[in-house]
Image (cartoon, rainbow, N blue to C red; front, side, top):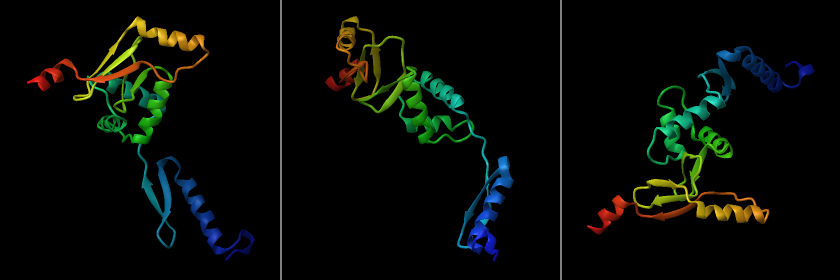
Length: 171
């Protein structure tokens, strides 16, 4: 062992780091097994954050129902590199912050955010969502601003049965 660089164990770690650096963009190296052997890990092309943002918005715009993060991850992975739920959650947090996506708290799902929506009607049976503009509910927002209170969530959500589910329930 080379005593100037530490023990043989540390020298091996230095060799592994050098090997990982040498593979660069072609893939990643990782140590595994009891001997600490270096194995090449296949590199998959990664999507940039902006690409995932647009992909998620496109998927949501093409759906007629709210989608969960796992639904979005599955659909986003169909064409191209795999997108995991953690990526989708980060993307959704960013899109909600930008006002491009709305989280339906009752469902734990997401829809594209319309320019104005004061009331969100959620069918508890089929999970259909209707986003409605209601100027009377804007009073809540106005009152909150007047009291220097920053609302964390809007629009107001109300659960019930849509016309289709209500008709089916009455039969």
